[in-house]
Length: 459
Image (cartoon, rainbow, N blue to C red; front, side, top):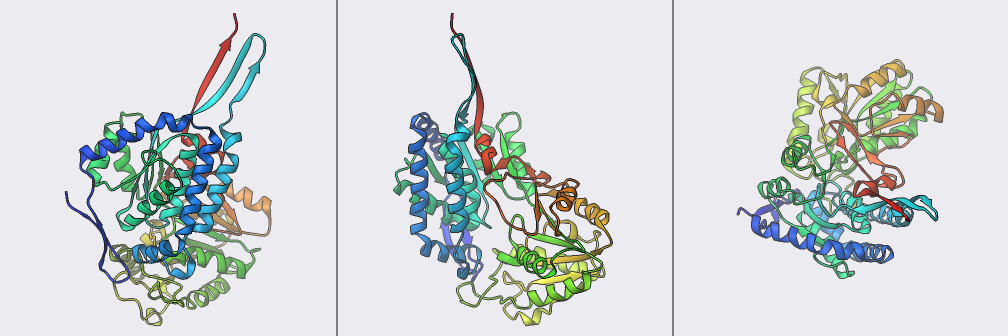
């Protein structure tokens, strides 16, 4: 079988290469996971929680190596220190709520009847993880799945092949049995074959719409539950009463951090006409403070995109928009590291509209379009004019106003005065072509368990 190569965006070399499992070996791995699941689920909950937390602690001990590897694999500057803040916070929260969430709900416990609802592990969970936040996105499902008593098979993106290996190394060193959590390297055909063969009891996939459609087709007729996060075109809306400086700082960081490669990054901004000129001026100034460069250099605040082909998509969207009348406000020559390949200068576009791909199709790169709006109604209509619905960021001084606008937006999460953030106590979910399912919060445990009713009668 053809080896899977990881091409580093830093210098274009082959950073890692792995051979995918043959179909028979992949089936054997899943069989081991299934054989190990009952014994894992039979362990006391507190033991599973302790082992999972110990695995994450071991992962933290690898921080220096992991941060360096992330830079080589997907280009994030080392100054940002990896993803450990979110990994630790999400693990702690899900561990904290596990006992209460997974406890039976007692309807009656009398001399005549004992009736209750329990939650039972689904079985074998497949996680197909993306490269942009490769640890965080895995942890979202891995932690609750293991705590709830499932075994897990992890298939990581080819761009971050080493992430799954590090996770497995950490969890196994902490005492999680090797068959309970397995990292595997699979090609698309073998993955689809396993799904079609009903090898898994739950599949969580984070990636493109096309990838999600392929997963759905493979799972058709198997009744395997799916969790799909498939992309976004997340909007920000700056109302007339917004704190302008805070809005600029947060929305532009949400648009350009990680070279714009964030699941819930801000990709389009709508600004009330009274603040529009000032917002654009400050947004341009903010963007021009960025330093595009080698991710290992201390002053680099932007590294390369994860692959030259991803940067090509963004360049094409920008070029098409400019040809259609958009005005670019950032001079690329101020970012000499832009090499026409993976290193791409940030861009802010005005005179944009929804006839342009850059305002309607996922860019997943360092570009944002800004449009002027006259009122809430126009902003809501534009925010909803999208095939995606992951998050929306509203900038106002009033809770009730934000909630009222949020109720009219087709999205999974409504933010007020913040963006590009996951609160582990709140459900991470989306609508429309962003996908379906939920992770984090107590609902994250519901995704990896099933309800089981007990109706016990004394005679």
